[in-house]
Image (tube, rainbow over all chains, first blue to last red; front, side):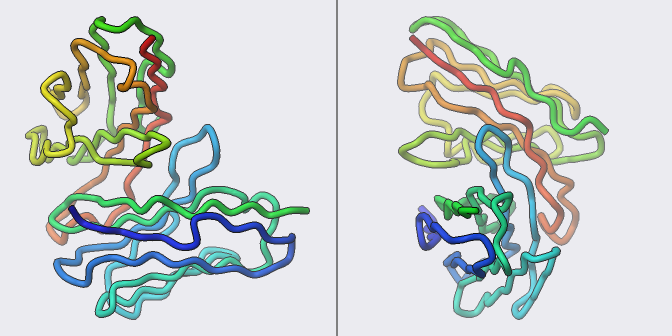
Length: 110
Length: 117
Protein backbone atom coordinates (compact mmCIF):
# COMPACT_ATOMS: atom_id res chain seq x y z
CA UNK A 1 0.00 0.00 0.00
CA UNK A 2 1.37 3.35 -1.01
CA UNK A 3 1.01 6.20 1.51
CA UNK A 4 0.05 9.70 0.50
CA UNK A 5 -0.38 11.95 3.49
CA UNK A 6 -1.84 15.40 3.68
CA UNK A 7 -1.64 17.83 6.53
CA UNK A 8 -3.31 19.41 8.24
CA UNK A 9 -6.53 17.42 8.08
CA UNK A 10 -8.57 20.62 8.42
CA UNK A 11 -7.91 24.32 8.58
CA UNK A 12 -10.03 27.26 9.64
CA UNK A 13 -8.83 30.69 8.57
CA UNK A 14 -10.21 34.20 8.32
CA UNK A 15 -10.89 35.87 5.02
CA UNK A 16 -7.69 37.50 3.81
CA UNK A 17 -5.35 35.07 5.58
CA UNK A 18 -2.80 33.23 3.51
CA UNK A 19 -2.47 29.53 4.10
CA UNK A 20 -0.60 26.48 2.96
CA UNK A 21 -0.84 22.74 3.26
CA UNK A 22 1.36 19.77 2.58
CA UNK A 23 1.19 16.58 0.56
CA UNK A 24 3.80 13.89 1.30
CA UNK A 25 4.38 10.98 -1.03
CA UNK A 26 6.98 8.29 -1.79
CA UNK A 27 10.01 9.65 -3.58
CA UNK A 28 10.44 6.59 -5.80
CA UNK A 29 8.65 5.69 -9.05
CA UNK A 30 7.28 9.20 -9.40
CA UNK A 31 5.26 10.06 -12.51
CA UNK A 32 3.14 13.02 -11.51
CA UNK A 33 1.50 14.79 -8.62
CA UNK A 34 -2.01 16.16 -9.06
CA UNK A 35 -3.80 18.70 -6.89
CA UNK A 36 -7.60 18.82 -6.85
CA UNK A 37 -10.17 21.12 -5.36
CA UNK A 38 -13.29 19.37 -4.11
CA UNK A 39 -16.34 21.31 -3.07
CA UNK A 40 -19.06 19.63 -1.07
CA UNK A 41 -21.63 17.78 -3.23
CA UNK A 42 -19.51 18.27 -6.34
CA UNK A 43 -16.77 16.24 -8.01
CA UNK A 44 -13.02 16.85 -7.66
CA UNK A 45 -11.69 19.45 -10.05
CA UNK A 46 -8.05 19.47 -11.10
CA UNK A 47 -5.95 22.46 -10.09
CA UNK A 48 -2.45 21.44 -11.10
CA UNK A 49 -0.53 18.58 -12.62
CA UNK A 50 3.11 18.64 -11.59
CA UNK A 51 5.79 16.42 -13.03
CA UNK A 52 9.26 17.88 -12.56
CA UNK A 53 11.26 18.36 -9.41
CA UNK A 54 11.25 22.04 -8.57
CA UNK A 55 8.03 22.67 -10.52
CA UNK A 56 6.05 25.69 -9.44
CA UNK A 57 2.54 26.25 -10.74
CA UNK A 58 0.20 29.17 -10.20
CA UNK A 59 -3.46 29.81 -10.87
CA UNK A 60 -4.71 33.12 -9.56
CA UNK A 61 -4.17 33.21 -5.81
CA UNK A 62 -3.32 29.50 -5.62
CA UNK A 63 0.15 28.15 -6.22
CA UNK A 64 1.97 24.86 -5.69
CA UNK A 65 5.54 23.63 -5.45
CA UNK A 66 6.98 20.17 -5.91
CA UNK A 67 9.99 18.39 -4.45
CA UNK A 68 10.18 14.86 -5.85
CA UNK A 69 13.52 14.04 -4.22
CA UNK A 70 12.17 14.44 -0.71
CA UNK A 71 8.60 13.55 -1.62
CA UNK A 72 6.47 16.58 -0.82
CA UNK A 73 4.37 19.26 -2.44
CA UNK A 74 2.99 22.45 -0.93
CA UNK A 75 -0.20 24.20 -1.92
CA UNK A 76 -0.45 27.91 -1.07
CA UNK A 77 -3.50 30.13 -1.07
CA UNK A 78 -2.83 33.84 -0.85
CA UNK A 79 -5.53 36.06 0.66
CA UNK A 80 -8.10 33.31 1.27
CA UNK A 81 -11.68 34.05 0.30
CA UNK A 82 -14.86 32.26 1.49
CA UNK A 83 -15.23 30.72 -1.97
CA UNK A 84 -11.90 28.94 -1.42
CA UNK A 85 -13.61 26.78 1.19
CA UNK A 86 -13.28 23.21 -0.06
CA UNK A 87 -11.29 20.04 0.44
CA UNK A 88 -7.94 20.08 -1.32
CA UNK A 89 -6.75 16.67 -2.45
CA UNK A 90 -3.41 15.59 -3.77
CA UNK A 91 -2.87 12.45 -5.82
CA UNK A 92 0.45 10.74 -6.39
CA UNK A 93 0.72 8.90 -9.65
CA UNK A 94 3.03 6.03 -10.47
CA UNK A 95 2.67 3.40 -13.15
CA UNK A 96 -0.60 5.02 -14.22
CA UNK A 97 -2.28 4.55 -10.85
CA UNK A 98 -3.48 7.42 -8.73
CA UNK A 99 -3.12 7.33 -4.96
CA UNK A 100 -5.11 10.03 -3.21
CA UNK A 101 -4.41 11.62 0.12
CA UNK A 102 -7.27 12.10 2.54
CA UNK A 103 -7.38 15.82 1.82
CA UNK A 104 -7.16 19.07 3.73
CA UNK A 105 -10.54 20.61 4.46
CA UNK A 106 -10.28 24.40 4.33
CA UNK A 107 -12.92 26.64 5.84
CA UNK A 108 -12.56 30.37 5.20
CA UNK A 109 -14.67 32.55 7.47
CA UNK A 110 -15.89 35.92 6.18
CA UNK B 1 -17.67 17.97 -24.69
CA UNK B 2 -20.16 17.33 -21.89
CA UNK B 3 -17.50 15.95 -19.59
CA UNK B 4 -17.57 12.58 -17.87
CA UNK B 5 -21.17 11.46 -17.57
CA UNK B 6 -22.32 9.11 -14.86
CA UNK B 7 -25.71 7.58 -14.32
CA UNK B 8 -27.73 7.32 -12.26
CA UNK B 9 -26.90 10.23 -9.96
CA UNK B 10 -28.64 8.55 -7.06
CA UNK B 11 -29.49 4.92 -6.51
CA UNK B 12 -31.40 3.48 -3.60
CA UNK B 13 -31.72 -0.27 -3.49
CA UNK B 14 -32.30 -3.10 -1.09
CA UNK B 15 -29.68 -5.48 0.18
CA UNK B 16 -29.19 -8.38 -2.18
CA UNK B 17 -30.18 -6.52 -5.31
CA UNK B 18 -27.91 -6.04 -8.30
CA UNK B 19 -26.72 -2.50 -8.91
CA UNK B 20 -25.20 -1.23 -12.16
CA UNK B 21 -23.45 2.12 -12.37
CA UNK B 22 -22.64 3.62 -15.74
CA UNK B 23 -19.97 5.94 -17.04
CA UNK B 24 -19.30 7.69 -20.33
CA UNK B 25 -15.76 9.10 -20.44
CA UNK B 26 -14.70 12.19 -22.34
CA UNK B 27 -14.29 11.47 -26.02
CA UNK B 28 -10.63 10.83 -26.87
CA UNK B 29 -9.64 9.86 -23.34
CA UNK B 30 -8.01 6.45 -23.21
CA UNK B 31 -7.91 5.74 -19.48
CA UNK B 32 -10.91 5.36 -17.21
CA UNK B 33 -10.96 5.04 -13.44
CA UNK B 34 -13.62 3.97 -10.96
CA UNK B 35 -13.32 5.40 -7.42
CA UNK B 36 -15.34 5.00 -4.27
CA UNK B 37 -15.64 7.71 -1.65
CA UNK B 38 -16.47 6.80 1.93
CA UNK B 39 -16.12 8.67 5.20
CA UNK B 40 -13.77 6.02 6.55
CA UNK B 41 -11.42 5.56 3.61
CA UNK B 42 -11.74 8.77 1.61
CA UNK B 43 -11.34 8.44 -2.15
CA UNK B 44 -10.04 5.02 -3.13
CA UNK B 45 -9.30 3.63 -6.57
CA UNK B 46 -11.28 0.50 -7.39
CA UNK B 47 -10.15 -0.29 -10.93
CA UNK B 48 -8.76 1.41 -13.96
CA UNK B 49 -8.82 0.69 -17.68
CA UNK B 50 -6.34 1.67 -20.34
CA UNK B 51 -7.58 1.45 -23.94
CA UNK B 52 -10.63 -0.48 -22.67
CA UNK B 53 -8.49 -3.14 -20.99
CA UNK B 54 -8.62 -3.54 -17.20
CA UNK B 55 -5.09 -2.86 -15.97
CA UNK B 56 -5.40 -3.04 -12.23
CA UNK B 57 -8.41 -4.18 -10.23
CA UNK B 58 -6.61 -4.65 -6.95
CA UNK B 59 -8.83 -2.03 -5.34
CA UNK B 60 -12.04 -3.91 -6.05
CA UNK B 61 -13.31 -4.91 -2.60
CA UNK B 62 -14.47 -8.42 -3.39
CA UNK B 63 -15.98 -10.71 -5.98
CA UNK B 64 -19.33 -9.00 -5.69
CA UNK B 65 -17.84 -6.10 -7.61
CA UNK B 66 -17.14 -6.28 -11.33
CA UNK B 67 -16.38 -3.69 -13.98
CA UNK B 68 -16.42 -3.76 -17.76
CA UNK B 69 -15.49 -1.43 -20.56
CA UNK B 70 -16.91 -2.89 -23.77
CA UNK B 71 -15.85 0.12 -25.84
CA UNK B 72 -14.04 3.42 -25.52
CA UNK B 73 -17.18 5.35 -24.67
CA UNK B 74 -18.83 3.23 -22.00
CA UNK B 75 -18.03 1.49 -18.74
CA UNK B 76 -20.09 -0.19 -16.04
CA UNK B 77 -19.47 -1.02 -12.42
CA UNK B 78 -21.71 -3.77 -11.13
CA UNK B 79 -22.34 -4.90 -7.56
CA UNK B 80 -24.11 -8.21 -7.15
CA UNK B 81 -25.42 -8.82 -4.56
CA UNK B 82 -25.29 -5.39 -2.94
CA UNK B 83 -24.81 -4.92 0.80
CA UNK B 84 -25.41 -1.93 3.10
CA UNK B 85 -21.64 -1.45 3.50
CA UNK B 86 -21.44 -0.72 -0.24
CA UNK B 87 -23.25 2.56 0.38
CA UNK B 88 -20.94 5.30 -0.87
CA UNK B 89 -20.42 7.78 -3.67
CA UNK B 90 -18.89 6.16 -6.73
CA UNK B 91 -16.94 8.36 -9.09
CA UNK B 92 -15.78 7.69 -12.60
CA UNK B 93 -12.89 9.68 -14.07
CA UNK B 94 -11.11 9.74 -17.39
CA UNK B 95 -7.80 11.00 -18.67
CA UNK B 96 -5.81 11.06 -21.86
CA UNK B 97 -2.82 8.96 -20.94
CA UNK B 98 0.00 9.76 -23.33
CA UNK B 99 3.40 8.18 -23.81
CA UNK B 100 4.87 10.21 -20.95
CA UNK B 101 2.38 8.91 -18.44
CA UNK B 102 -0.64 10.61 -16.90
CA UNK B 103 0.60 14.18 -17.07
CA UNK B 104 -2.76 15.43 -18.24
CA UNK B 105 -5.75 16.39 -16.18
CA UNK B 106 -8.04 13.72 -14.80
CA UNK B 107 -11.70 14.69 -15.17
CA UNK B 108 -14.28 13.37 -12.75
CA UNK B 109 -17.94 12.68 -13.30
CA UNK B 110 -20.53 14.00 -10.88
CA UNK B 111 -20.67 10.68 -9.05
CA UNK B 112 -23.39 8.20 -8.20
CA UNK B 113 -24.61 8.21 -4.63
CA UNK B 114 -25.54 4.64 -3.75
CA UNK B 115 -27.62 3.73 -0.74
CA UNK B 116 -28.15 0.07 0.02
CA UNK B 117 -30.86 -0.45 2.62
